[in-house]
Amino acid sequence: MRGTFYGIGVGPGDPELLTVKAIKAIEAADVLIAPKTEKKDGSVALEIARPYLKKDIEIVYQVFPMVKDFADDTGAWEKNKAEILALLNAGRNVAFLTLGDPMFYSTYIYVFRLLEHEDVDIVTIPGVPAFAAIGSKVGRPIVEGNDVLAIIPGTANQERLEEVMAVASSAVIMKVYHNSAEIIDLLKRNNMAKDAVLVSRVGLDGERIIHDLETHENEKLNYLSTILARRN
Image (cartoon, rainbow, N blue to C red):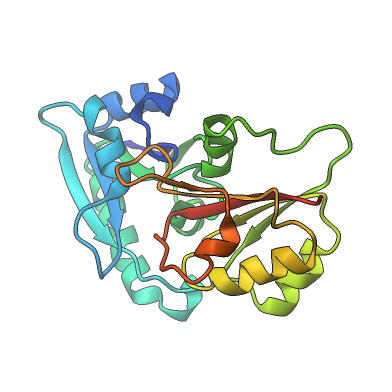
């Protein structure tokens, strides 16, 4: 009998933000898949979940290439899929850990798409996204009343960023680590910079909260950096 595949959102950083359902799934798992990139050792998602791991849990690190479209490089994905299927076929329950929510800008989405057409029982467990944790952390409503919220990947091209920001009442801008100066300039031009806040690594070691974005626009930021902004 095949095992069950769990996709578990572990939230943004604080282990106490895991749901009861997520903790129960981790406790039921025989194997944990901890995703990592080629450039970094360890797994942030694994460290968040560590307080809930069984002593005899098997941990398998899988490397996932950082590509915009996983169809551009399917080799690593197919290898990881085969490894997961072998574990499931052996009757073992497998949990895939992912930061934030599994269905929100997550590596898990690609793994889910690879497995959803196989004869596999898949249980996806939602998690707290970083922007929700940031809103609570800094005491800031993200949207209210009839606000229109735009959730924008900072990696999008400049034209797309400008287009979306121009019509939004409030914005969540994620992954602002590599072009923060351009994004802050866009916020200024759309009258959204003065009341913006940038938070890096919310709930993790090295957490930073920046309110005066303009004085930090040329700084190198951590990959896990998000801006909350609203139109003045």
